[in-house]
Amino acid sequence: VLDAQVASEPDDGRCGSHGLRWGGAVQTTESVEHLFKFFFSQRKNISSPLSMMRAHGRQAVLIMALFSLAACSTAPPEGAVPVTGFELDRYLGTWHEIARLDHRFERGLVAVTADYTLREDGGVAVTNRGFDTEDDEWSVAEGKAYFVGAEDTGSLKVSFFGPFYGGYHILALDEAAPDYRYALVAGPNTDYLWLLARDPALPESDIERLVAIAGDLGFPVDELIRVAPEPPAVNATD
Image (cartoon, rainbow, N blue to C red; front, side, top):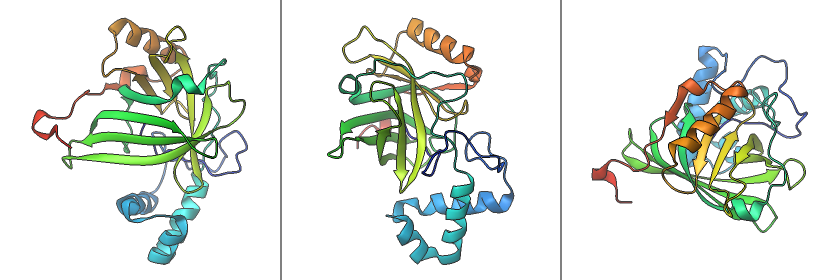
């Protein structure tokens, strides 16, 4: 799933008391917003934090400092427990986004998929893809993920930029299916939630079950967005 919630290492397991958070619950000034918008407008041209600092000097230093301030936990949301008995081999492959809570990094994206493959270092390579209806083009983001604890627990940290990681916590799976069939995934707090499936569509009964689980955990499920499984017909080609 496309995501830009961030957490810098090392991680103390909880968000700090600094009051700045980057996500749906962010409380920030216009100047902070401006700096973050500047960074994300440049993200396609930035290969590393060092290249950003070389290219943009003082603004880059301020942005990096703000990322440190905005660093949030890679732990799951309070009260949410990642699945146990998790088998990564069964989870690898392609997932389709069925529904999500809105956030700026996926706003306007449809036909969203996430592909997970093994990395040589034992981590997971992540490729997120979705069609941007505003820019009328496909958007692709590549990242990496690692377990934050035991490898039989569905709790990972994911990075799409340098050393900054966001929590990726699997709260429910179809245990009976060899490839798990569906998944309920959360970030580090209740601002981030995704319903994923192996197919572009998921039976309504399964969606209702996952929504009920999330609702019981305090997620604002009435704000979930159903994701169109296909791009506009006129733009259906790559």
